[in-house]
Image 1 (cartoon, rainbow, N blue to C red):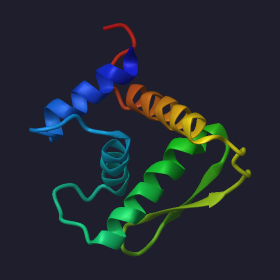
Image 2: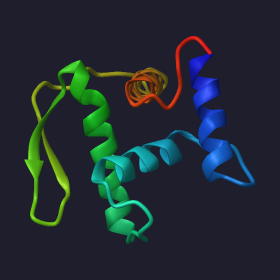
Image 3: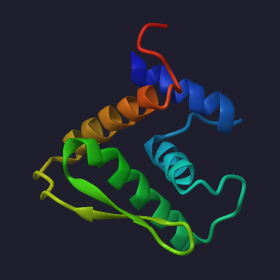
Image 4: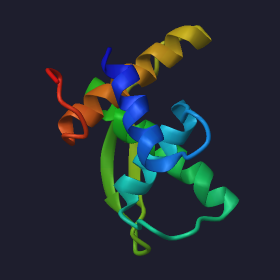
Length: 113
């Protein structure tokens, strides 16, 4: 399964002692999108990174539009469509699907292999 391969990939690269979870992957995607690798982030910035990741991941589904980058280099998105009411398990499935698609798009893993 692509999700398991992706989690293994991130765990091998970024987590020495435990399997990385969805929030950890969202954080890494947020850092990737911000483009400020290797720096320490404050608690409120970490929350902003999760928001950036979710907006970026749900953009291809039509829920967000990229608006631009501010003077500090942070990307901004605008909600374009109301998210459907989903149960917690359904939310997780949608986010995992979006993460896998993002990983394939960025060639972090390949569908066949």
